[in-house]
Length: 386
Figure 1: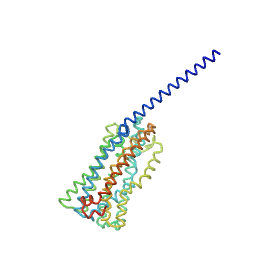
Figure 2: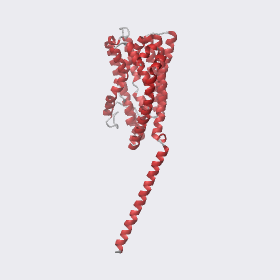
Figure 3: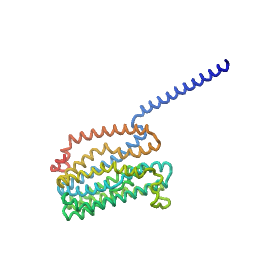
Figure 4: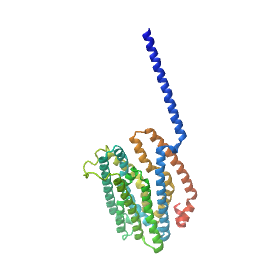
């Protein structure tokens, strides 16, 4: 009996320890929940970092939007809606082909580059970068070839004279500077959103300077195309140069020369990932400028100009609410590597709530004040864009 009694005491003692431990764990859990409630949303590390990166993009993109709208306002007042519409159609035609042709390789840089860097697999990361650069270059060349071949075929429908077609074909070289997905992905991966924001503003600054020149000295469509081409080239070269500088600063350019074989090794299913992201985003990215081209095909260059004004103004006002989108990818990549699904869900819900509220405020403002704003900035002829 004494042996059974001692066994019973041991069982009771063990149960008491388990009970006290569970009470302690519950107290700790309650304390953590209370601390989380006390610290609030904006003390959340990933959300705070997301808002910081998004604010950098908001600043740069907003400045870019303001400069772009300013350049458009000057051009419309100087050369008229018809010539502005032709300029818009040439750029939208080229941009649409570039958007459809390019792969979203920046997503591959984040998806596969994040774990490679966190685990110190430098050779694997360098192979990934070379692979995505080759994807960018090949898609840019394909896009340029399509643009050169399609320009004379669509010229009669878009209101382009035969004399304008060679200028359009030459303008298609700008696709080479539009397809900068890898530099964009690298700067996002390294949290250099400040450099990304500046790149967008620089292109628009070139357009504003060019528009000011046209305001003072006059100009024609060919000069405007040169200005727009220079702005695209400036923005693209800025991204490429700073991406190379970021790689060099981290010692990621040093190492044995890489061949063309085995670039996808160490990155499981990267081919299907790249093709899937390309298929999923082609429609949305291509539609940004395709709609302008369709308006030109169905109506005329002036109507395309009006449509593009409305699109640009709307983008400027809604950009505030959408700029968490590119900034959230690096955060998701880091949390996914750590398998922190709880924080991913929390970050998604909180960011969606903030973006929805900001978007509602901006849309209501656009509805109430859109028409007088267009007339004041662009002239009464453009109020029809409302």
